[in-house]
Image (cartoon, rainbow, N blue to C red; front, side):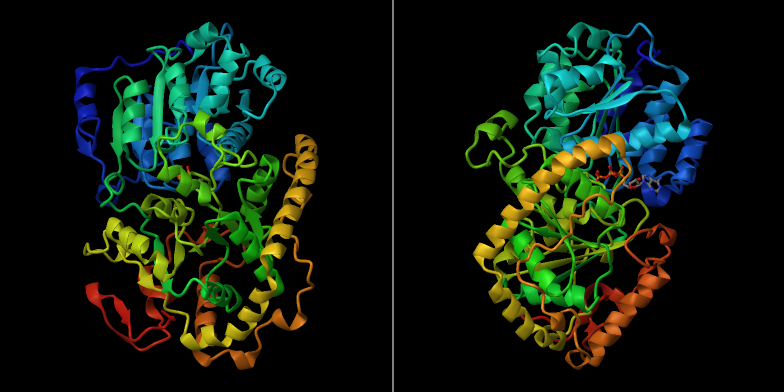
Length: 604
Ligand SMILES: Nc1ncnc2c1ncn2[C@@H]1O[C@H](COP(=O)(O)OP(=O)(O)OP(=O)(O)O)[C@@H](O)[C@H]1O
């Protein structure tokens, strides 16, 4: 692999690189109009990989895969920008593996041939799992390791000693290996044949600029460099200049400038306008009255809020788990795996790191570590939103609004992945109206395109909300600051204990998910039995009807439980969508031919 011949860059390539929306012979890539129905085989991938994909129920390539795979197979440098959930990981992994299968790395190599660098350890694990499963399904003898900065020098050395073919890591960790001699610079220079920078738009904001700069010295000219990104930004341009030679720039039309369609079209966006205090009633109504489909990923802006919400849910018999940067890495990975496997339906993610990240792009990784603002306990390489492939999430709820528009895009991008459909519901308080308006204008709500419209959530009536007020306020009073603090500390203690057990256990049983449950009850107060169910007399006819429709839609989509929403793929047309056609209030014509609600169905 190391000595694989690359096609020389032609003058034409340089021209192509100048034009950001053009590929190869000047063809503009347009997902909708293109109608390219090529199969994975037709893209040039070998049979073992195609069979492996089929076993994973992946039958047809996504648009970014259609354009990227042939170029990467040819050994070209590629910058690929495509929206969240569009399948960028396989877009590079498949051709890289194909080339490795065809031309296995030279036995004389003293360092790995392929390096895949990602910004967070969660992503490291995600990419590592994807490569490993493909390799296993293809039954080929290739070795993959992930290097994490939490590993000791001797662990890093052991991992690299067996001379892996592929390394998945963060830039900081590779730099550590170069500095402490576990990775020989000269060997790397001679062996490196493919370098992938995944989630490139995030690498610099995570503070890896210096690490990447130092690494460039060891990237030989013949090395194929691939840069994958969900958005285009100055950071991506900077990286491109830093590391790529003469790349093909693949920009799907819906990505790029802010005005483009950056939310997948198969995600319907809704909002509920309510006071900050009433958010609890609204989320309870959404979950308890079954007005949104599972699985549900709920974003909040602080760890305390995540625990407050968990304790609140517990009192109503709703089981949920919390994900945050304070937890040990093994626990975080395990929580993600359990959620992805469908062991629980509600995950509350504290996504404050992203807002801090984006507010302070220039803060470096090193200075972050020193910063007093970032408690030592928090993991600087943790990213709850960006790039993480939460499986089969149908609904994303913004319990707290993100602090930036890109934050919103990446949160919403956790649903509607690949060919799945999804929905989002944002609870917007008057204090959050400003950012909400900014998000709406950035998404291009004024364009004549319904898919960009964030509509009022139509299934929740004022009556339904009010029927839950007394219970909500009663329970909410019992969740004091002290209770939140205690449960947070308790959860951390549990998870630290779990973490060691998990580490040992998963070395022997990598697929066992049932060992430790993360959605266990934290509350000291036994939930009152009468709060588990919403009595019939509290429900009005409209809410019952709305809930019935959501259930019917779920059944029609084959979404019978947490898992396996796949069977449905794309059959859920807007015209048949109850969220688009049902209203708790009499509708009147609104702009763009959509439905506008008469009066206000939420408290404002
Ligand atoms: N051709 C395909 N058909 C169906 N599913 C696919 C296909 N390609 C990838 N997927 C699935 O789609 C999901 C999203 O893929 P991936 O994580 O690569 O997206 P992404 O573009 O990297 O998103 P992000 O920018 O959010 O990281 C994954 O679960 C992946 O297995």
